[in-house]
Length: 372
Image (cartoon, rainbow, N blue to C red; front, side, top):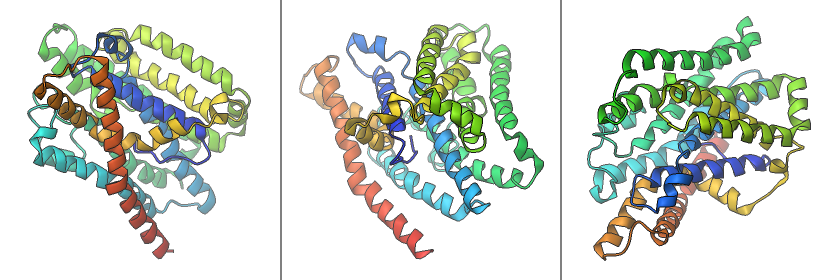
């Protein structure tokens, strides 16, 4: 959700737009909503996993390219770019949540230090402190941005880099094994209808970074193979539409497996299957032979560019709009209110762009130019 748009890879814009739409539909179910939202938004939680795959692919791709061109990664430049892309809008959202109670979709917030240190996803009690809970995924991405370049610098000079793909696959397997262990030790046997089950499931399986490495790892793996394996790259460019079809079919099977999101099989295997499904779609999106890469759409490009601001602000905006509707005795569970709420999210994200993102992007460019 914090990845920067590529001017060349148009297919990724479509996927990023799909990801934010999925997230919006899933989270809208927490507010008053039309009944049909429950059906089409049920699997919207996978939108975050799609964001993870996209982030893993794009960010690692930038680093691999820099390694190939310069033989080294400039940490200062990388972290500066990430800072100006992520922190201003994120901290502005924190300001709204902590200073304007009306913006909060729920009552209680976790401590501010957990948001500032990007550790909110550990020990997150979504039942009692669920306000701005969706920042958990930003915490994982920020931890990823911090660790990946350091990890690459550490293994680049060693023989381990030859086995980089094996290392990444091992991270996926590690997450899967950890989810299996945690399920059997802490979750199995609990009453699925009880709040304590959901508190434990989210806290111990859904939110921690070490149980959610699948999406980022799949994205990194694809990027690595595209950079360093000519055979893999050729396969991707020659089979774009087949890869997309395979991704859609596997995702359909995954939705069947994950019909009950917190079941044992979904908790253990679901995130891996979702990541592989979206990984296939990402491969299709960058393939020269895919309809995705050749299809240019101003709508999806714009929605992709606004996706980070939409993600940050959407719950607060939906909450405020529905509160105003209720004040004037207007219906909040119909499609009209849904359209108004989603329109409000887009307007809010445009304000983010004008007031925060564009000015800080200009500052970033001036600093980068002055450093050359």
